[in-house]
Length: 231
Image (cartoon, one colour):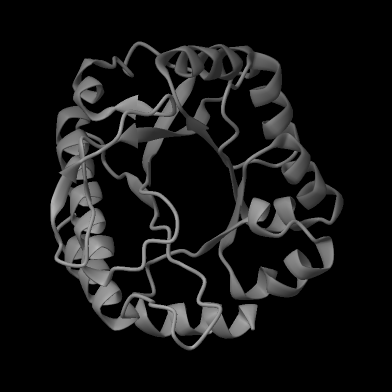
């Protein structure tokens, strides 16, 4: 079933789109090994999840990003040792920790900034609403105030967006894609970055019955392609 869902997504998104599996959704080692070849990588919410991937050899072979909140210097160092290819940064304090780790090891830490967008798509009618406050991530309006040039131990190579779970409305999903790419375009221009990855947690639902609503993936894929062509 999981492989069929991945194949369905693949049919509707551009080849340039990477699909990552959130290990917290199901950390069963046998399942992860079974799905790995159909994926581009894994998202780990804890060092324990990353360690499981390391022990199975998956973190050495596939892209892995750590999203664990409340990171410390020791946690970032351990994640890199276990094969993490990038670290999600949720605050300026975590950015400083990553900078320290990068300077100590003499190699910049690849980092994605988790952004709290000021807006998000909310309904089946595509309405744009104010986002709820969150203790996770960096508020959108602070992006321009963050000085990454002086933090030589960090390579900010991407932005991470999370818009919630079980988003069944296709118009809301597409609105969130547009919001994420608009914020990413502005951040890329301000930083004059040569390239920047955009990691979007769309919160697509899991349909358990025939009556469950699920976004039209053809429409979602078209919106992704449109936004990527302008990025």
